[in-house]
Image (cartoon, rainbow, N blue to C red; front, side):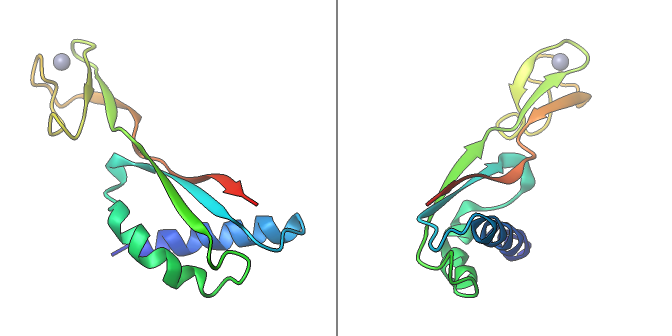
Length: 113
Ligand SMILES: [Zn+2]
């Protein structure tokens, strides 16, 4: 479960940013999670309160998540498709040669204070 490590890093970063800006309490954190990271949002929901316990500034904050679709463009026929839904292969020509356009991100995009 590498979700905990990633989540811990994200919360630590938020904690630092909050402190630098003299924020006493963070209301919510918005995470952007790409489908292709393999991270399961349910784990973030489950472990966020546990991880946040170590950071008083973040403790009690709400966790919001934006899931980014795994999009790719086929380098053989230029078809745009969803990597998860098509299991990594182009639906038109079945090629696995592709350029990933989105879905690999994992980052904090918003901090509510
Ligand atoms: Zn194709």
